[in-house]
Length: 421
Image (cartoon, rainbow, N blue to C red):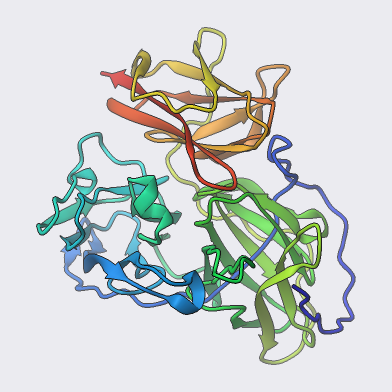
């Protein structure tokens, strides 16, 4: 699929790249416009409370997904964007009209085990799911069932930092994928094909990228410099520039970034393929021209995560990833305050995205116990490779570890771990 690219007069700068453990390269950039969320504000912990209604029902989008039915929230593709301030309470009134139970996974959100937000809603029933996200960042919600999630039952959750926004232009890009009857993959962005958005001429826009596809997406932003602000919802300590605007995002992963715009040319966000690139979105500069900012932007406010993970006496577990997904089985029990190292060994010929619930993790070097300077909740494990991660146990409960094969989303790892006070 060929997509014409408008001329531009800026040249991309070379800079440090963020490697995702070799699982298809380095991180890249994208953007889109936020879309609606119903809310009702009342005071809660000094922050507004938000209440939304979600209905899970059968629907169709033949222009995107071909013939047949999808499972949709509120009849939309994707579901509505849920927004709440850090420290505020979000209540979701979920009505389930499907023929199977629906439970939601709030990917990357640190919730207490057994929280009401995790409860399943039986067919034909309704329930109120309540959560208070402790971290600001970009997250997403989807059906816990991989089958329902792949049928489009998903949407974005944006937890905003306290105070005034740092960026006047703050766009969300929620990427999904569907194989239509033509056989050519379609990648809607917020439910639209190749939408156009605006950013400040000679300025920067915050771009929130959610990969809601089962694919490892190789992305490139053709435009001026862009910088990593956050990975999987957690801010990086020092924003850094993406080399040549390139990034690979694993299924379920998120990246926030600051994209620089000049005063004349649009930036193009593409999926790189072995053939022609596929255009995802375009951002055009608006407003008065000037001198674009140079150097990295200021970091986002940090969340309450441990500054150190002592690894000398860490509890260590081996988790093989294979063709068959075993039934839920605990890998062990850990006391709060202990450090944990997980070794994820992928014997498959395809990369795997491993979601670790309960705790953000640091990706370790494969040779020694040093970690990359950012957090993950969704860990890319390349084909025929091993990845190691570490975290500090702090949330009591039983937490799942789920690995899904890149390409088809098949579950190839299913385990749990228990943290005890």
